[in-house]
Image 1 (spheres, protein in one colour):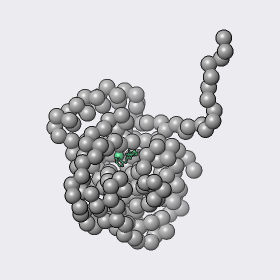
Image 2 (cartoon, rainbow, N blue to C red):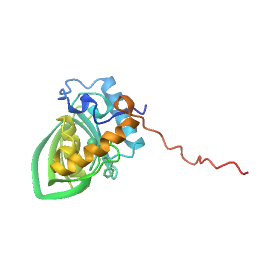
Image 3 (tube, rainbow, N blue to C red):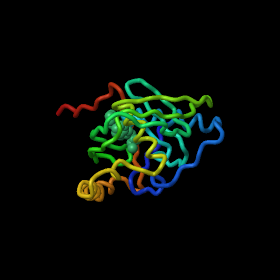
Length: 185
Ligand code: K2U
Ligand code: ZN
């Protein structure tokens, strides 16, 4: 398995419509495994295929150990109250903003074995489902911010994006246990 580069805001792939998955090939299964590994290395709870440069309807989620592979996901119902919570995005590092979403969402998707399933998510899981499915429609959480908040976020991003030449964010693995001490003088 490998840790993939994450595409950041400005890369057109994040706004491209994604293609439905028509065949679950070994290559796609490898991509799913790499997306999980990349998500964990980036300390995320979700990751969508466009974020690793693939314009396909595929995302992965792991909220408190509840793991989901979302192939061709769709929202079936949105219920509950509108809930506002702060969101971030692995493709827009260090930018956060309050996003209002329905509290409960039921989705229908296919898993990596080609089995179709439905899942209902509330709170963080429900929000993550909606955040990832938005990615597959080229939608980002900053699109929900008020014009003023979005302007501020974009101004901050204009400065920060210099750290990501080619709109690429390299994900580093945290090497467990190895800590570098200053050499004793
Ligand atoms: O898709 C992504 O960019 C990963 C997102 C998913 C997400 C954002 C906001 C709310 C729910 C899910 C995150 O950056 S993953 C980072 C994170 C970790 C714990 C809690 C919230 C966000
Ligand atoms: Zn995101």
